[in-house]
Length: 142
Figure (tube, helix red, strand yellow):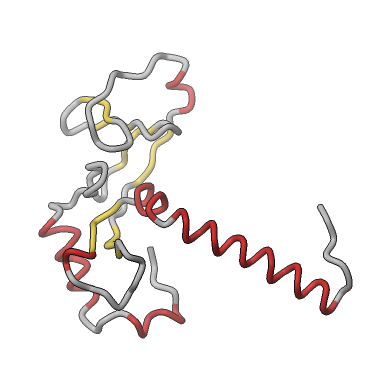
């Protein structure tokens, strides 16, 4: 994920090298949560199952082998491009020890950050509500 401009000053000057070391040297170019390979296009289902073409088998959302989906589930199949990111486990961009960093694909990174995103969404709604009350009257309900 790209670093927000207002938070860029929290990251060390050697962040690109540190991130590359975590993603490609330590993790070997794979997600450390589910095993998806960086840069590959993979077939995946909405429930998190994906096809590992390198090993010729289906894997679940945690990277463990699972049974192949039935034909009805294959209707929801989509192809996605995997991109790894170095994620902070404690959500603190100033804490850059290797034990606090993990190589995660987009899906695992979003799942890891879900509580943060839920809180930000709540704050955004409250902020809009307050601005609406302050400047345009009661907040219009959808």
